[in-house]
Image 1: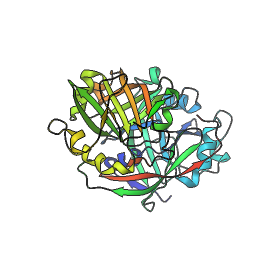
Image 2: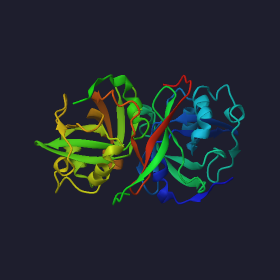
Image 3: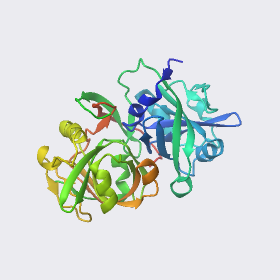
Length: 178
Length: 178
């Protein structure tokens, strides 16, 4: 695996730009993947991530039961897999096999990392009080893995119905903001 | 104003890609602006948006008191203003004047739209129960305005410390996902 351990206090800058992500879960040794775009950072350190996962997803039940998942960030090379994963259910499909992705053991959770993603964030549920009302989970990132060779990741930003903007050129401005 | 009223059920596709936004508030006729990147869609229709606003911001107090704001989406032409607005406080600065932005009356809330942004979303607080714990507001978008002439908006996606990825080329894939 090309990824190395990454400081938790810098995780916010990976998710703050709003990339579509692949969330892995695992129940009784059976791993699953879902596509997700509804997430936001909520705290810097330890990093908290809020996200909405529809109750229709198999991953919803697994996350609720195991309280663990991994957030993986794909880039444009994985666009087809991102959409394909969002269009079938782990109840009937082994998504790792179907989409040719490689599960890698995580350090602190049962859910696997996806080798083909340059970022993987091991998470545990920190607060579930809004799950019943909004399907909203607050996750704490407990371990982060980043492939530092990927300098300007071409992340995918969903605009609905399978249309994605790819992260393009970067603009650097002098800022006092974190 | 180039913006026209926009269907609420389509708002999700504007915020889901994770652009940095400019949030306007207004208290006793005095309007303010803040820069925000920590937001997520939470429901399609009526659209709900969850967002974190630090208690250090003047906008936090105004939003809490008035229960209203406008989320405006800037594009790359406004990158300097986005950072400048994030680096000063409305307690001491009239940000509309300082950054040469034009306030436009909203239809349903006191906070103004920003004329220079191609999207403006009038919002009211729908749920404040996580404000004390996480500074997390759940907003309902009650009126949306979009300049349809902007087809592929070059939105800004913050990667920390004033570095932004600009939304670049688009990829369209066949998808059953909304």
